Image (cartoon, rainbow, N blue to C red; front, top):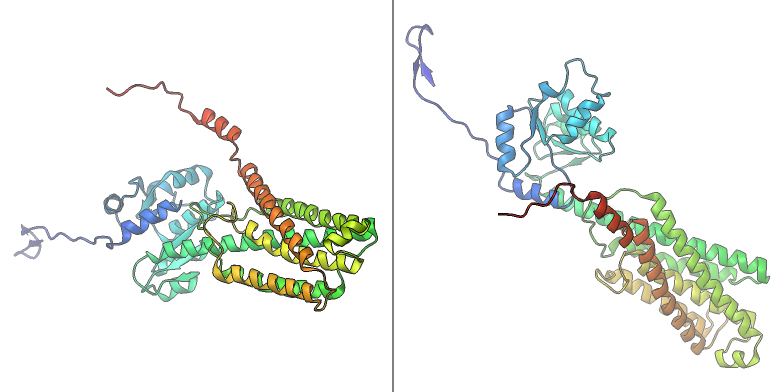
Length: 401
């Protein structure tokens, strides 16, 4: 502050009026939680570099803040950022003194390196970057231009809700993965069992009414996957379609082995009178009902395997809607087969033996899932040993004084 008594020819210093615009109280906690989820937070601001560095320091972020004028040449095309500049963008903790084209260029450059980029903003100058980002987020009180460009609009002040959105998004992602693996594996199982038994045995393991009823019984558990207790991934998630199809194919092949193995056992029983008397399996119609029980039960128990990378009996346990939907459909299927509703009746003893077989295979499929994940994700002991050897420091260890 200064005062002039001669129309600005000279000035008298009066003092300094400091101005302070502190971050929100929840900002540091929000950034720390995002970092724990594997999300890297970068500051992009139009403020001066010194202000940006101090704000980043208060929030516990990196202080490698680069002035935009030093990073971006004036004639640079925002859609075609040179590789050297992209390298500096990836290394930086943030940028200061940026213009709208700089924000857009930063988002575009990070995406060109395979990063999934979320952008927050509230002003007209943020709109191009919000539109380009994979998830543009307009904060509370944002301008109409920012809201129109964003994919997500926050209605309450602050950004803490973003962490909850990340958790819920990863749960949804996990449920979709679970459904895809389950559906593909089940389709492989039913298709190959029907085709192989028709070609090699000359026998259709299911009647038309059985196929219709089985489809109806499978629908209810599939719908309840949306309510399952899916674990939240500690790291960012991406579509790994080769891994999804690979896992589904492996589980499908073992499911075919499970179903076809029981079918061959049933054929063996039909050829042995003493086994027929023991199991109560006397006709091909009984064999079809037995396969109906196996395919309905085995298909739905497969959900317990596909929903988690751990053993199916470990936490997080299935949500109540999913669990009771499976129990209800299995009880319904058992009652239909025991009392002969829409299908030929078979003895309860035979239904019990089929379920012993199903539960045994549930452990086999769980082990197959875990082994596949271990190799597919490169988590074998051999790989970890080699990784540790390759990544170890070449500097000699100096003991502390």
